[in-house]
Length: 584
Image (cartoon, rainbow, N blue to C red):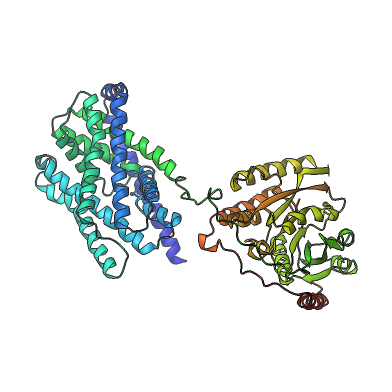
């Protein structure tokens, strides 16, 4: 706790210092700015859009070289994610103080690729060290007299910090590589690419100075850029605002540019680079997929359809109903279910999720096998349990049905038919493709909006009902299905099975609004729990995208034994049975 308070104090101190430095820098710049010169430079730059576009293209090419360099040093890093990480870092450095964008290049790669942290950090440090070494070298080579004019006898001290950081980074890298980090040696090609990137970056300053009527040689443009970046090694303000302009203006004045024009050129150069950082960095947060905050949609390319599970000739169709305080309806729903589906016997299993009424007794009286949850866990947990219990019975198909009498038990044939025919692995009963006798207007609107969202997330234009309480599963899909939260199942179950490649279909069904009880769905609590769960589902590790082991074909003798076991489990009384709510 004490360390947390200390960390909070340090963060507050950094904010205060950063804001203070920013205020001083802004105040100083407002006092010295030459409005006429600034306006003239801005107008001249905008009057030559082609030159500006070419300069920005050169700036972008510099980041292309850096992306290539990183991929060469770090095996397995996709070039797109390398590009994205560098631009996310650039964006962070332009909007955050203390160069806090630097860690973002590492976190971006770690969030968006399966690469381990050690080589990612080591390679990032390698290239950042190479950057600093290149800046020092260019500042010394391009215009050594410029350093003498600016810093006098202190010119070596002015370069000491970036040089020390470069050396420290390279030494640390050597230790990491010696310790087994999987990295390639940087080598001459990477070193040349880093130097070339800084030369290309100087194109922005060169073009703006040309347009402003104060042409610079390439050598001077590179030198001013290098000196300015060296000063920016530790930037207290967001984007180094103030210190960038001060360093660049001083360097320009030292090579003969008037102070007013020098400041205008420096500020315009910084503005162009900031604009690029905001646009390219903003795009890099989301592209390429997965974005910095993960995926928001299923991938365009999904795994192939898993092989079908062998089914015994006498395997049943298993329907399970999660129940929570549905004593008024569950018995009727169970009794209305047919004895056979597609010529196969139907087994009805009720998962009692902590009902405090007589739901369990009503279901048992109607002929269902009643299984109790160990505690009041919620609808998602009840569906997870129902799928698991159904798979244990080695079914030909599994059907999930809400027990609140909003759905018609007689429609089970329509849902199970594509599963039994082998044309689909996962079938959702669609109320909107079927017949709705009654649905409250706000419920209809909510279902439409959530379904539209799920349709976009899943990239399935044929998805018409994302919240249906009537679904069917092939045995393999039921075994592989994962419900990652206890609150609900609707969206995450669909995304899970689609993400694993199972064939999706819909069947039109009938719907009548409940006449008793109430739905557990309340808009804000529902969204607060479902949206994060959907995000977690979309960003599940690829290694988890695998089908469950194929169940063995089971004879009627073994099936009967399992049925007896389930019945025995159901006979154990538990006054505090857990709860499952139904959703609509």
